[in-house]
View (cartoon, rainbow, N blue to C red):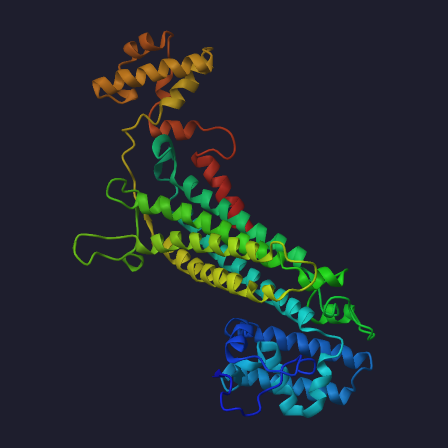
Length: 467
């Protein structure tokens, strides 16, 4: 798009929407401060869609004629093509994309174009545009999230029966089916999806017709405009409607929480792809090497995704701080709300696509689970089935682990007679509870880390995601 700066030669400049009240023109630096074109140009297609809906409603109420509506719609459609092709000049002195479009419309259709703003303020106009944008953006994020979930499910389906260690405190804890870990990411992402879907419910009220703050004396059909713009209902209070940015805050929060979840997944796989862990192998397409050390294969892509969570959290805090303590009604501070939310959603849309590529090309590796005494909990639970209180069984097995460590043995390598002496009771079928495979096979409740439970999770998610 062609962008123009304020004319310094003294030539007549484009009039601002409020030019009738003020005689003096702002200086160049003030004009630059007032302008939000560099950011809100992203709203152009929503502004045009909302304007066409508003004009159609004005026509239905007899506030403009059918012929005038036809000319306005045609002019807006032509402007849409010019913006898309980059042929429309963006004049900084017009402040924002809303006035750029209105000015271009008046140039095309004459004074008829000035009738479009009847019963409408930039306050409810911007609120509408932002809601239309947020609705599309949330849906795009949901689509990307669902695709990433599908990639995780596909990986778990393909390689999920490999035996993996589960960690607490980053120490080996219990053995699991590898797919159980992979499916934990699917659950996290589903909560992110749910937050976005929930936000869409609260967003689903059309603010157009609220005017600047108190509505209008013109007989507007707000229900018609709501239907034309895809909302299920209208807002009930004009003051709240024009100053509500909760949906942007919720969108920023959903992105920051998503960033935290992606960060945790990335942290796992950065660690697991190291030579010390050797649990996952990342595709070369998503790694880099070192400018100095030729042997290096660095998980840079995951590190960058992990880092984006910091930006998302910062944008959320910035937006909340911007909105804090604003008085009722619209304040110009809100002009900067878009800078936070556009940045964070744009980043999340980009990294979700990359994340799906990482998952689809990653290979799970089968580790050696003999070290780490991952079957210790299972042995304690076995003793509990023999009537020993679990707290006592826990202490017994802890001492057995110390004994095994000193002898450099796995629990299953301790002779049965010696084990029964250490346990203090006969252990006729103890072997069924020792060793990673036996432990995994013994998991009982739904949601556990066993193979049977993994199959149930896969079935659930394949149905939910229509795979």
